Length: 283
Image (tube, rainbow, N blue to C red):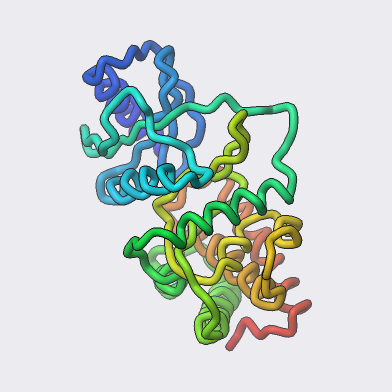
């Protein structure tokens, strides 16, 4: 968020917490991009907030409750307050449990795969309306096609991203394989290393698709520990996901830290991946 937005968001979170009899004297920024995540002290509650226009917070709260009840490895809502969405000064705020990070070790690929497999198993038991993964690809396609939203994207790079998104959406979407409810973005930034084991956060990106689409967000070594993976499909999903996240970095409104440098670096990775896979990003 921009500096003025951050100050307003912090004030909104502190005001809401105080109205719920949570003691807040200080805040620590845990994550700041298009959304803001704060640790509220000394009550030790996590506040996640976003502008009202960008949020699907009610869905995330209800979904997180159902997943937790199913025993899925997800972060829990704050137990001391009613599980609901709060709105103040143009922001929506949700309150979550704070987990002290276990810094002594990283999550191993096998642990990561096991947590994701358990999450997927729990998701298969829920009947939740969610968009198909192709809907998210189409969002990226519209962004690539909109020169006003992506003014700094060179023509050759625009053709590369547009062709890659189009061809892989068709190739993966027409396979006709098994699809299910997915996290949508289970990358390392959305996985907490806690004393309770690995826990996933940020469930608002939920969609339906092949499990390989979720695995494509995880480190490459994770796929080797997930049972029944279609290796060719996973390879295509990795390139598709790379094209999607590269597209977000060229959005003029993107606030991801160091996003433009990453966008340039990832364009090179897409070209290298296409060359090595035999796929044609111009299709």
